[in-house]
Length: 208
Image (cartoon, rainbow, N blue to C red; front, side):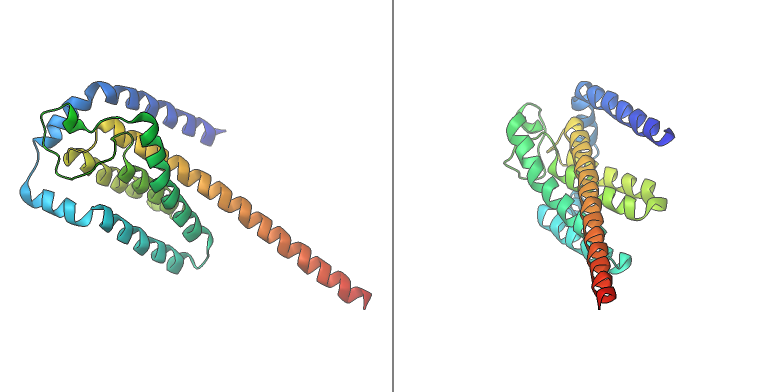
């Protein structure tokens, strides 16, 4: 009961913050663009590019497979990342929100052709973070904090509004939760099938 209240409160706070973000989108965008530094821009574009993101995802997948010694989290991780990547594109087509540079006097530091809402990077970051947070619950605050920090770089680069990032984060989180639920259901079915098979074998042995 307490857990459900906590989740509901978190969703309520996030929803209010998301609505407020539409009001302060421009302010946040100008604030981030004013903090630009050449070395930081180069660092972000190198380590957090689209290609680098896939490399990071692959490394984290292998890390999960190695550390957890089971298929559940790696499979959920791969499924969540894939759905977040392409599912976000579907949502982008539905809303078709122009990039910030289309209406604000800022220079984007990353060349992207797709629409702005929601952020694909934020969606993938939080999909990955949610799986890791479930696998390592004691470190969940650090994990989500790091995912949030990475997501904010999209505002720094001038390619997303704050609302895009928040929406992407919520989408990625939701996708990861659904992936975990589906994975758990699949695991239960596999375990059930194994139990039935073992029970059937024992019954055959008794008949002999």
